[in-house]
Image 1 (cartoon, helix red, strand yellow):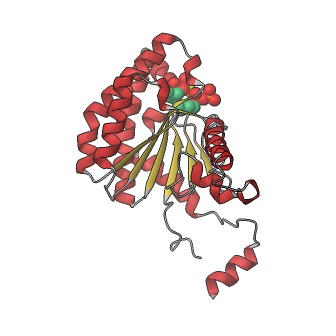
Image 2 (image 1 turned 45 degrees about the horizontal axis):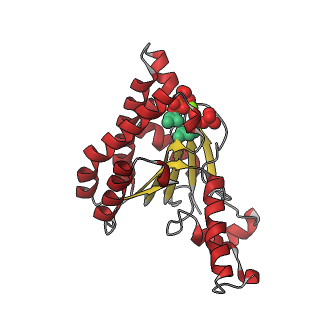
Length: 247
Ligand code: IPE
Ligand code: IPE
Ligand code: MG
């Protein structure tokens, strides 16, 4: 496939990191970095729609982020709540399907209700799927998938020997979504921090030092530009891929 004809990634997954350091640079409290981070989300969502990306997964709060000072955790919860309240109508108007993945039982009941309501409102939208990971952990996701399957085995609905990769994929929080093609992490760290562990087995990784609040449409274009230059071999050889695209 030529570089020009290589499609944009269908599913982009992003670890939006660096809000705290951005705020520090500006001599502002960390919270201001998170606020600026929400603004950056708006711009990236808009650009994904322009590029016809099908799914955008954003890591908003990890299962490990509860370990932060309680003041920061509650400010993050407030911000999440506020962003949902302020943005859902606009998302709906833009035909965006909103999904929130993670262990939602740890959130306040009003936040859980708002999440449920927002998902219901947008579930039949056919544009971008915006998948927000909140109190999400890749290991949590595998555990809850295994529990779901184990219950089916116990109930006699599934034979243990019939458990397959597909069945596990289908039991994950991302079940109905394609796997990420491109993973981006801003903020300079080169780690996965317990994001979509199972789902990113063959995802292309892109790391940038840009802090999340500074990540804009141009920065996204750069990441996609890197993606389109890569050859995804999925275990095959370059020659095999060449033959298949010639055929
Ligand atoms: C990412 O930015 C946002 C969340 C984890 C909620 P950070 O808050 O981790 O920012 P840094 O890494 O401290 O700069
Ligand atoms: C990962 O960022 C989680 C989110 C962006 C929500 P962290 O800043 O929490 O990751 P670590 O702790 O540096 O790995
Ligand atoms: Mg961080």
